[in-house]
Length: 374
Image 1 (cartoon, helix red, strand yellow):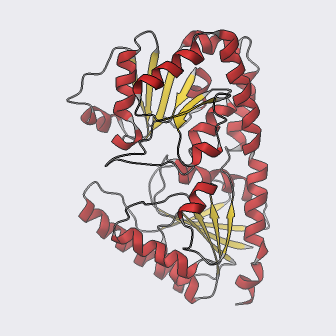
Image 2: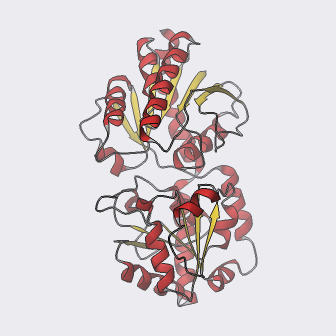
């Protein structure tokens, strides 16, 4: 089976990581010919074996006008690539954005699967256009959570399936090895290290994290951002960071971070101008793999991942006082902390890569006759 996977920007964020996890397993079946159309940038999709790469013409830019032009050029390039290129049994669109490839595939009557990770409460014009194309083109849609499916209620008339994300097999095996270490939980408890992995965006709760660190000098705080050091230096240039807060940039192997962390946080802000509701949150299931309890917003995808008061807490993250209280609650007693860790590890079993791959394969192969007979 010949399949083209389309992803706009290859980087070290959630959606390319989810696609890379799946492709790493899917490409092992030599009966499948796997192609990917994505950007010429470094990211989770860069080092995949058994995959043929094609350039989509996209380059991210800070300037919104330039970025819009880059998006337009990429859509045109995608359209031409698919319309005049090889015939594929399936076109797999990762995220809502690559509409150029989807439209060309629709014209050629190829099977089109959309894997949607995101929702835009107040979409700009290009995002609205991409949603319209997805509605018109999709033969089947995969959502990463029930929350996200509800966000698109009434938009799609085709078959829709919720498939929870999973970690990669290598990540899972790395976690298993670390968990065998002597007194692993005890060392994490003593380390008192609280971690926030995120992109360097205000709506990701970066400044909330700084304020929490200031209020809790007895703990160590680590901000892990996907941006280069030059960008984080500029971002915090006018801000006094507390001595108990460190920043690490562009960490490609997060296993060392999770194995050291005592607690992991997701502080995405669901209210106000900067509101951002997580549709899933990979960092939560990655934390659970390493038996790390979490604190996350009580909205969106995290509600389907975290068992509140068992493997973490779901909170109004802008209530810094309550967040600090829960941190103290988890990390003030070892027996209580170990119970949270054990629950986190048990919960990780619900997000196994084998289940994820099996579900997506079933979707891809279910309508194979459409692509091969057209």
